Length: 237
Length: 182
Image (cartoon, rainbow over all chains, first blue to last red; front, side, top):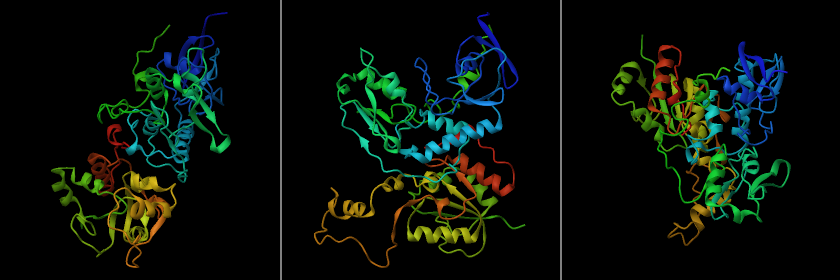
């Protein structure tokens, strides 16, 4: 069996290593599939559904689906992008996302995706949930208003023996991500910064610094999210 | 043909969006060639004197007066545009939305660290004062809004592009760099 598989994305012939997830396979072919809960290097969860594509006509999450020979993938179509846009809108109304007051604005993946999908206003009613800001940890602020429960921090930030420093607390609609009270002390300065970088929104912020990059020079000020992948020369095998 | 008529107002806003309108710099000369202003803080006309084509709304609705003005704008303007984050989603004033109104008043007039000289413990309640709403409402939850221009404030270029497109009937070209939420 060959090590490589052939497949198409929006009609374009692509090639990737067998077993790669669709998101990664697409990236290697210069195609951007938007992701939010997915993070390089950790096991995909497929929970946010932003990366939904049509594989041979069936909706599937591109971050959890391995590429296979002969797959026909639909990615940049009007109805799929509309679906993705409505997920972004739902996330915006579900929490309290006051972009002008957020330190992560301009570097926020949720906001960047809203820009990419041209969201001018969410079509759904704002929920304005009553949520707290937890500033009890000496190194970080955990703002529950902005958390989208992607679990990226829980999955990525671990101590030396592999235990997650962040954890879920409560259940269902009141679930929130917190610093594990027992392991919180192990959140070093480097890990705190890493946690802030891993967070796709502004829910984890490092204390005593902020707004270092001026408006106009932030990550998504000038170019849409994913344009680095799209402008990349595709690495044809 | 007479010029299109524009009206503007600031509800629960900070006038930053109006400042951004002025930020179009010398294009303001083109603007007054292009449109006529009616009720607006820019020309200080306080009451509608005729039907308008475009109404620009800054800020959301935090009290009964905001609701009254917004409904008046809907009645008098053919097209209503929500300008800025506050008009679109309540913005910073909406940060009080999770807090009961009584707690807000107590903080502002009785217990806040900057409260001085209110020994009688009075919370303003003159019938002349507009009633504060239970929460801050985005404009489109009160009346129908036709267009939304995000930003805090929306970039001057965005307001300009949108206004010109509305006036001339051309397609709105909104480059990536000008559509921002902050």
